[in-house]
Amino acid sequence: MVSDRWRRFYEERDYDHCIYREGETMIEYLATFCEQIGIPETVLSVGCGPAVLELELAERFPNTEFTCVDVADRVIEDGRERASEQGLENVEFVVGALPALDLERQFDLVYCMATTYFVRDVDAAFATLYEHVELGGYLVADYPSEALGEWVAEQDEHTQAFFELVAAGENIWTRDEIATLFDDSVEDYGEAVGAADTLTHAIYLEKS
Ligand SMILES: C[S@@+](CC[C@H](N)C(=O)[O-])C[C@H]1O[C@@H](n2cnc3c(N)ncnc32)[C@H](O)[C@@H]1O
Image (cartoon, rainbow, N blue to C red; front, side):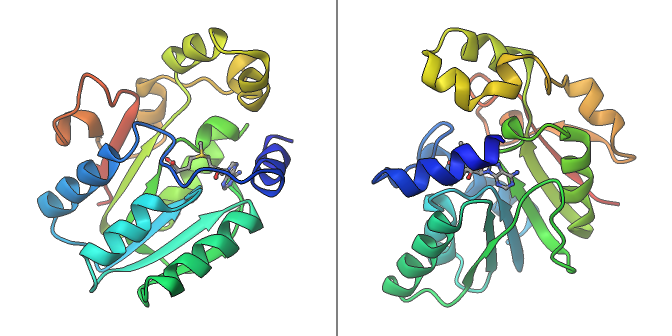
C-alpha cells in the first residue's frame, strides 16, 4: 500500500522538515487565504507530513486550534514533540488515514495538500474531507491531475514507486470531475491566493 511506503519513509530516514509542494510559500498562501475568509477558529490538516505550515500558522494565529492528521505515526509523534518544544498549545496531532478518517467533529477550514495523490479512492477521500467541514466553512485541497501524472512520468523509479497510483493512471481526476463531487461551487485556490501559474490543480469551496 502507498501509505505503508510513507510510514517506512518517515521511519527509515532522518527526513527533512519541509513542505513537499511549493515549499514555504504555501504558508503565505494559506495565511492570505485565511485573511480573506476571516481567520478560522478551527483548522484540520490531513496528510500534514512534517507539519511545517501548520506549526508556523499555529504560532501566527494563536486563537486558532489546529488538528493535524497523517497516516504515519512517526511524523505525528515528531509533530507533537516540536509543538511542545515551541510551547504551542493550539495544535494537536492524530494518526488517521484517508479515506476512512472520522474525527466526529467539523472544522472551519479543512486543508489537504499533496496527499490525495496517494489515495486510490479520491472521491471517497474528498467526501470525507467535505464531511469534516463546518457549514459555512472551507475546504482547500489539491488532487492527482494529468499534469501531476506527466511530472511523475519524468521522475526516477524511486519517486514513481511512491506515486504508484498516479504513475499507473489509476487515480487521476480532472477539475470538472472533482467539481461534480460537490453541490457547492468549486473555485481555483491558486487564483485566490495570487499563485495561479504555479499552484495548479488546487481547489477551494465554501460549504453551504
Ligand atoms: C507529500 S506529503 C505532503 C505533506 C504536506 N501536506 C505538505 O504539503 O508538505 C504526503 C503526506 O500524506 C501522508 N499520507 C499518505 N497517504 C495518506 C492517507 N491515506 N491518509 C492520510 N495521510 C496520508 C503521508 O504520510 C505524507 O506525510
